Length: 409
Ligand SMILES: Nc1ncnc2c1ncn2[C@@H]1O[C@H](COP(=O)(O)OP(=O)(O)OP(=O)(O)O)[C@@H](O)[C@H]1O
Ligand SMILES: [Mg+2]
Image 1: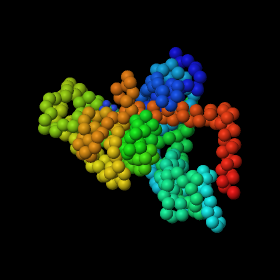
Image 2: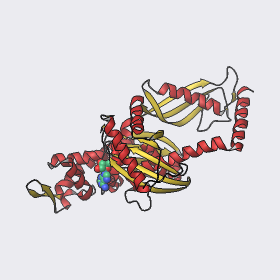
Image 3: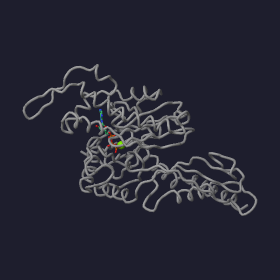
Image 4: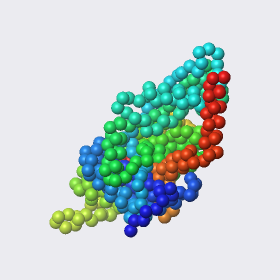
């Protein structure tokens, strides 16, 4: 039975993958104290790769995932933090420069940073797009002095460079509509790969340099971190469903059977010649044997394809030589046996599975939905602090007056 419990303590993340919709509910005492109460996966329908081809089916599927997680945890939720995958977003850099004063120079305030960032966002987005995330890269004062946080410095003009993650507005509106149709509110929308980093990447890794690779069903995202910032985001048009498709085509199997064989018998780490034995597959006329060597041959071929893409993306990034903490992987396809070892071998870097959660063997699959639930909690906490704390309100007034003074005197 589903109980109605205060919304303040329980948060739901809904990761809209093109293969599976993953839902998680967390109980948050504080940001370092999260209990994952449950996770639930429903096979995604209504998508055709990155487009919605059946709104009703998609809404039903979202409902299956949300009702499933509510049944499992006994927690009733009304709103979700929605996550969209790599197939829905694009990364782009944008910069803008503004004068700070007509003549002379002035102390740079937060107001100036917001103004130049707003300009860069305006210039970096197309008419039919919206910004899902913006990651400031650097600020340049008077063409020479580059800084990550220039507040308080003197200058005459300021330039900024942003890394934007954008999405098609109409698609986002349709995804939100599907959630509403399923009976839930949308707290806000985030990129699932970035949400996963919230629980999969440690602070030390972000500071010293690492890459988070989210291997999904149709696409893979690579987010590069350095100095605590997101410095680069790349996408690879490859995911675990390519392996399933190849197994099905090359061994003349149905997609469902190929998927099952992939999850239970496929290995990405071995030389196909070293594998022996057969898998018995049920057909109309009875059971037929399939050589494991043939399955591993197909998997290897696909994994080679993926590794070539990944190597090009990682080595092509300007942060390649700064990945001091190696690579963290999440996403359903990272669960394929041997994938981690293959990445490690190819990139000669340390690779680990991200988002370890006690009691959850496949937590890499749920990293994004757990990260989304955490984002939901942080957002609510920020709102509560902003509205309720009198001291905070006073501080904000004082802060605004100080900014205004800096602005005009
Ligand atoms: N145990 C497993 N072993 C191998 N592959 C797996 C396993 N579990 C899931 N997968 C594969 O992971 C993929 C789904 O991963 P995930 O749910 O992260 O994708 P998605 O979020 O739906 O897709 P996308 O992010 O591309 O929109 C599928 O290809 C599925 O077959
Ligand atoms: Mg995904």
